Figure 1 (cartoon, rainbow, N blue to C red):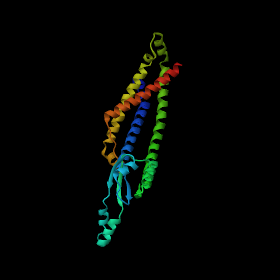
Figure 2 (figure 1 turned 60 degrees about the vertical axis):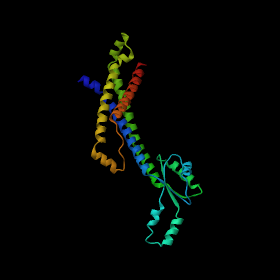
Figure 3 (figure 1 turned 45 degrees about the vertical axis):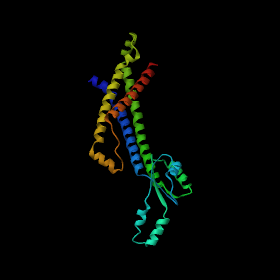
Figure 4 (figure 1 turned 180 degrees about the vertical axis):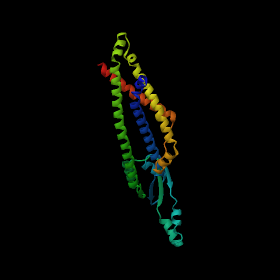
Length: 268
């Protein structure tokens, strides 16, 4: 019973850190995947009085992915049944040239304003449609969601750090007499606290395995997949081994740093 209690004293706070770390990385990947997929469907439309060379648009906007000329014949064809041939030809002759521009990235609102300004200043461009209001609403939603997630993660991390520090401090005082005897025989600080580090390694490995297993099951659950897609989100990539290694490394790093800080603080 003492063995279980000793090795699990650090497990729950380290488990909290591990699950929070995975929640953070997964939600960030989810939001990033969402932005990339939204960006594929997001475009800037411009109309011009005369044809514009693609090189001109590349000079006005950085990091353009695709420039497509919109076929206006399809637009004017819808009026074929209501307009005479002469009026239809006149419409086709006077209709502006339209271009669809897709970027390699999802621009911030300020960047979008600069892009619009650069395009409008070109003498041949009549109008620029960036769908700014819709874009801005989406950006604000992403920022708000990310801010709420980060706030709760920060609170849980602070509480977990404090709990680990308190558990390490309790362990230190419980084994103070033993460590003093070991010090008399020339044992180093690392040797005296080796059990504490082994507890951290055990707790980190176990918590990483449990958390990654849970996230794997969640990620591959069909009900959750459908729910994510219904919310307009997109599934992020999930690698078991990469996530396991990152979880283990982060939990070990945090626990080792806190252990060293508490131990050396008590030593002083």
